[in-house]
Image 1 (spheres, helix red, strand yellow):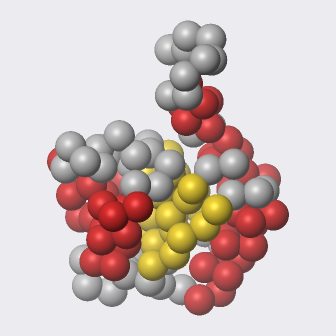
Image 2 (cartoon, helix red, strand yellow):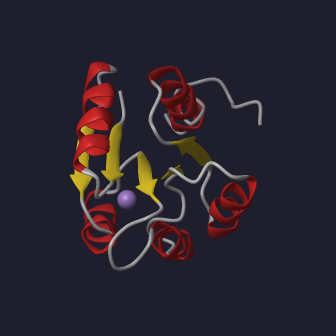
Length: 134
Ligand code: MN
């Protein structure tokens, strides 16, 4: 189980993502714009952030760059959510500091796989586990 923050302005995508995360046993926090999401990330330090790229006001790329340049939040993995499933956008997300990428519309297998890809990193932070292989 992880504490996951999702920042997404589309109500249907938010509803689906929250349902999928809760079904997997995660604790979910949500924000509908980057400014509110940044405040939650700083205050609550989630284990993982799902970041919509197209947001009203500050976009998800700018918000991710801010998180990754702040020592208080730089270690939190960020997975980009975007409908623009093009190589150029994947590159932009990586350059902004995103650790992973999920294309919309959300497909549950791809969604869980992208999140599970970050879980070993989360577990490796816990005391008492075997040293990571990275
Ligand atoms: Mn959006």
